[in-house]
Image (tube, rainbow, N blue to C red; front, side, top):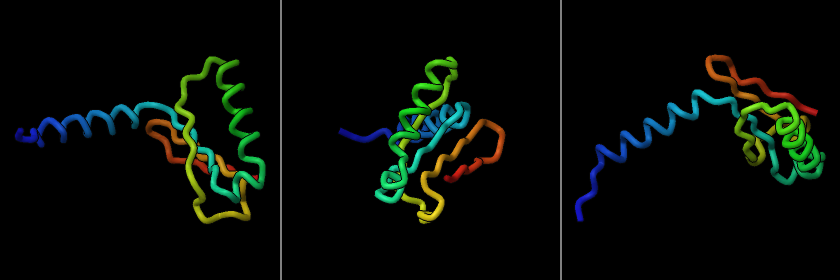
Length: 87
């Protein structure tokens, strides 16, 4: 069965464009983040987003190499630069 690479490409482009249009919040849950309390930060963010009715994609990521700043949270809003918050 031949693979329709053009259709796969179009699906990937659509998926990326959709993600670019939503607010995404990244929480570092590598071992350094977990040790610094990132699980509690993740739970608090989930609760606050739900209570406030804010539409955002909450995602977990691994260590980004700034262990001394953990727990780290990055927020990416459409059309704005990605911002990192530490400690």
